[in-house]
Length: 65
Image (cartoon, rainbow, N blue to C red; front, side, top):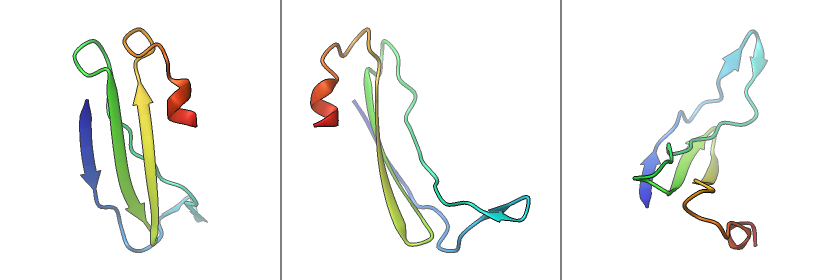
C-alpha cells in the first residue's frame, strides 16, 4: 500500500480563464503497489482519493462504503 500527502496551492488555479473547481491526486497502482491513498489541498479544500488495482484487490466495495 502506498501513502502520500502532497500539499497543493492555497490559491485557486485558473485554466483558460476558468477557475479549477477540483483537483485530485492518485497513486499509480499495479502488481507491486495494489492500492494507493492520496491527499491534496487546493484552495482551502482537502481531497482524499483511493485507487486500487482490481486484479490485486478484488473486494473494492468496502472502499466505497
